[in-house]
Amino acid sequence: MANLQIKGMSDDFYAQIKALAGSENRSVSQQILFMTKEYLLKRQQVQAAKLPAQALLELSGAWEDGKTADEIIKDLKRARKNIPAKRRAF
Image 1 (spheres, rainbow, N blue to C red):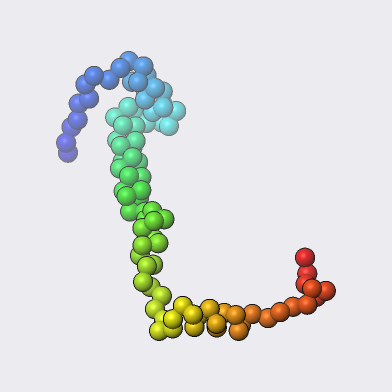
Image 2: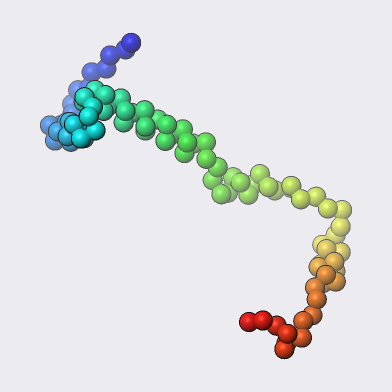
């Protein structure tokens, strides 16, 4: 098992980690390992998540239809139903 020595840590920062470790019933070493593992796991999750732009780009070209734009518009207009104004629920 590897060992790690951290140099250059300010006293205030060490005190914060020590207090956090005590509140979670861990040693300072255990707390540092826990925090490091949590950080790496969250980093992997963020990198694996798709951005909205990526999701849209993956959908690009997913819809294939032999109809022209004009034919699609005509189909949509034919499928619409006119409801008299007095029957509309607002």
